[in-house]
Length: 97
Image 1 (tube, helix red, strand yellow):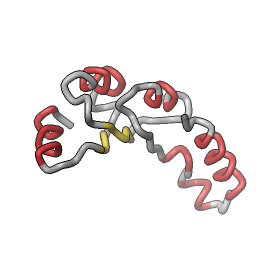
Image 2 (cartoon, helix red, strand yellow):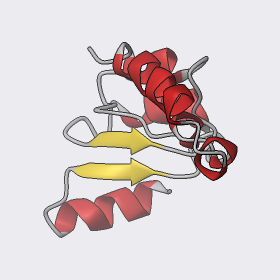
Image 3 (cartoon, helix red, strand yellow):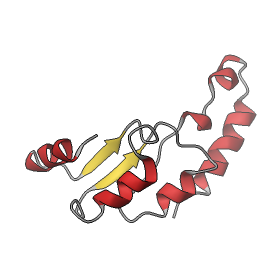
Image 4 (cartoon, helix red, strand yellow):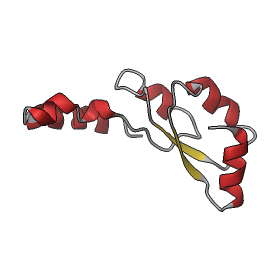
């Protein structure tokens, strides 16, 4: 994601954007930098987000939500480990503001 892409989205009327891959594209420092020039835009960072770092992203005013595959791991699906998925989903739910 670049500033030019955000401006194009704004021109098309969008103010809520996905930020992917978040960690590889600058992570927290990038989102913090965008708060000034793009103060009316909120983001949903995905890509590199985990239970361990999600709270740091959610603490930013321009982050509306986060996404992450840690909530529903492929091996848990393959093994039908619904209890594990439920536990992970509940943990993720606790992150909500």
